[in-house]
Image (cartoon, rainbow over all chains, first blue to last red; front, side, top):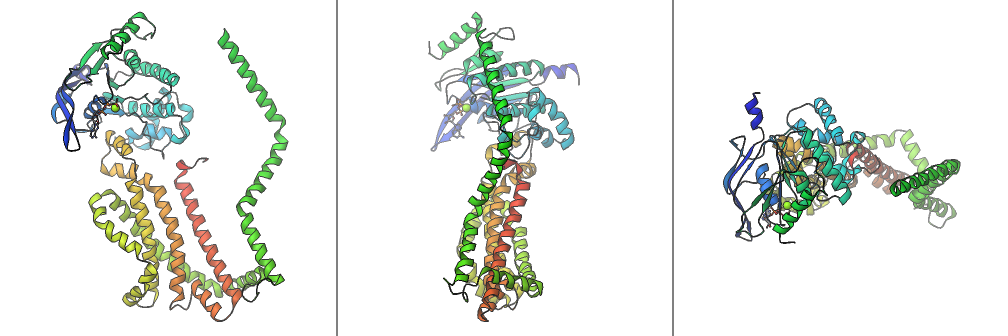
Length: 256
Length: 286
Ligand SMILES: Nc1ncnc2c1ncn2[C@@H]1O[C@H](COP(=O)(O)OP(=O)(O)OP(=O)(O)O)[C@@H](O)[C@H]1O
Ligand SMILES: [Mg+2]
């Protein structure tokens, strides 16, 4: 692989993207003419009010929904449907209950052609990465919510995608587990250089993890806004700049 | 620091708990025995009580022993039937009839159900006729099958097959339709095509529902077996029930009934065992 190819890995371009659903026969516009470049290796957070279309945008990026107009380009190539260059981490862990932790993590590797033995071997590394080596042989029903979500994250990382798409992955966790998982994600992303799109409704999470934050407008006519978080890592939630970012965001949502 | 203080006092608390656990080790064994006996009484107490009551009332004469013979008489009738080999033939032919019918129902019902559950328009097209067939008692159709297939083995096997097919078919369809679409979506994002989705997600997710159908079918198979063997048969456990009653060999009649009950229990136990092995992931304490 040449250096120039390496540099372009996981670059996303969203061009004039529009999407509406039909609700009781009438069209419900959700996304209107979105234009955005996501840089290779960066973490982009998407925040916005409930119903502003965050999940819809992520599902279009994943290829699970088709846009009505516009296109998504990955490394310059137009996407058509789902692809193994992207991995999705949903709000629920979506583990297969009949597979052990190890085989769940290896699932994506197997569907992409690895034999079970080889998949397990590689999956083991990622089980360790999320700190679940003791639970390799456990079934999903034996895991706590946070552990299950970590398995889902490991499964996504194991296929070494160019782009990682996360839809409120920590939304269902309690405050303490959430913070420790945020720290864990920050550590993982430092080591695995992967382009990341993180949908969240937690502003602090967005500031803690993201390079940039996309704010989807509340009203359908409004313009999306993009904010650069230039803070050094690891980030300190109580640092004055961090707090200033949070207040700025709250202000944007009219909450201050 | 105050936090560390909390930590040490917690550790002390755990240590205390462990020490207590050790000193109660011997009484724990006794209490486990008590728990086991309690479990047996709770689970089988009523059955044992019922059997004891039967034996008592028959020997004392609360009921007519000619109609309800004591259990020991029934058991010795069963034993002599087995030892002489007379009942063994009946067991063999009954097992053959219900076995062939059940196997055919499994071989057709599961693949068909898996297919119908996946392809919506097929399911929608076939559902009304399935419901109609299911609601029509197989016993009511038995005369039709006899007309079609004669009074021999074929119609007997077919009526059992017919009755066992629907529980398997319908629960398999139900199992496939209830597969969590979110899991299917997840598999697709990892590049799984339709065949892989079926093999890795739909099939394993349907197994518990399929087993519900299998167990229902096994019960139905024995039910229909008896009915089929009561009409135009000269062998089989069901035939023995009728024949013994006709010849007033009441102990033998009860022996045959007991045999049927045991057969049903054995079939169910076998299926439960298979289910345990195949669905270890869904058991709370596996
Ligand atoms: N499958 C669907 N069919 C019809 N309408 C839909 C569908 N999915 C989403 N919508 C509508 O699209 C709009 C945006 O939904 P979306 O799930 O993208 O919001 P969101 O920003 O993720 O909200 P939340 O923060 O609550 O998750 C909502 O008004 C919703 O009603
Ligand atoms: Mg959402």
